Amino acid sequence: MTAYAFSTKTTEPFPVAVSKVVDALKSEGFGVLTEIDVSATLKAKLGIDSRPYKILGACNPQFAHQALEADPDIGLLLPCNVVVREEADGQITVGFMDPAAVLEIVGNPEVTAIGEAVRAKLVRVRDHLAG
Image (cartoon, rainbow, N blue to C red; front, top):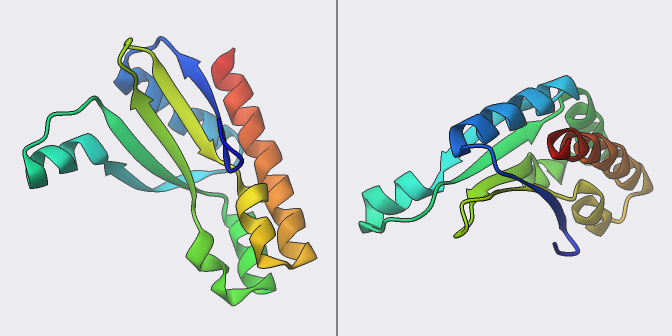
């Protein structure tokens, strides 16, 4: 995908995909703190119809606490965003922010290690969704 993200695809209907993503995140100790329905917001604010697109703000409290202890400003880079979006062909893409790549910019080895541990959990979520 990019240097700061990784993804998988599914053919599940959009609502089912979102539900499965939330469940898979829970299995790795994440909760979803925020859910932004981008397509609904674009419709309400701009009158634009778009394919389904949600941003889930995923947080693993244990790792978030460790990161905040290591650097109180780290909250500027939290939570880990997970995007669920419908493509033109009807497939669903589930994209994950790569916390290792993002947290590396902090320049703190402790924070970098936390980012790598969180990435490993999110990769397991991706792999679970990929089947």
